[in-house]
Image 1 (cartoon, rainbow, N blue to C red):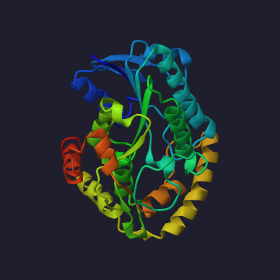
Image 2 (spheres, one colour):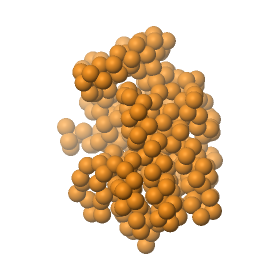
Image 3 (cartoon, helix red, strand yellow):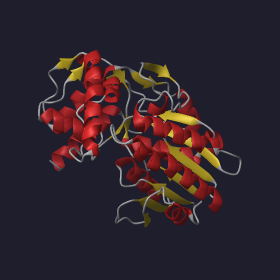
Image 4 (cartoon, helix red, strand yellow):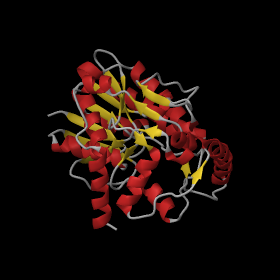
Length: 328
């Protein structure tokens, strides 16, 4: 039985990956900052700590690395410490421990430079052009990971695009909370065509990246549901599932992008003084995501992984509605 270390399992996707590996018979060990109570071995600590990383990878055959600082704002040094230094430490520890396979979970934002993406492939990660500290740091980390790929240490980068599902706090809960409060406008009428990834599909693709490493190593693969829809339609579906009113106000995208830049700077400055701890209502990156098309050609990804999504967008929304019905 293959022993797999999964980092970042305090998040929705990390937990889904660990659970799926466990169900498929892998011996799972997890690494996260906080204590957890799961049916597998767990190591607590920071991935950027060399001693913690060494302890976590000891005896592992493979690593699935999801741990990251995910935020629209914050200090660059914090993103560097977790996303870049943490990845570098884990790669070094894994190579020293004789780990064979390494799946780096990345993001399509590493190759999104502000303009629309219409049926494109993965593209090349570029830290100098990626938008925002998160995307820049993930782009640099992906470069480190893929540069380490070799016949004896195989590395692939899987880029799930906008992962969501029941229990999601990054997208779903923010949409629901702001819609309930009447503070969720659409940008440009919500017409931008985007694709997303239901959490179960993202977890399956990541596990397939590990299982298909012979074919996937050395590559970056974007993963989506393959069902692009207008962003307004997706938001309306989430709102309907949660039983909150969908947005009724539209704001020009150019105006939101300009306002987002100013809000982001003010929010970051306030955060350094301890005045705010949550995410800002708008940033330039978020405005770009909501007002520009971004959907990807999935043919190469599905061929390499020998995989197709098992949960459609409509089925995912039905599951989300059931989640809110049973856990209001």
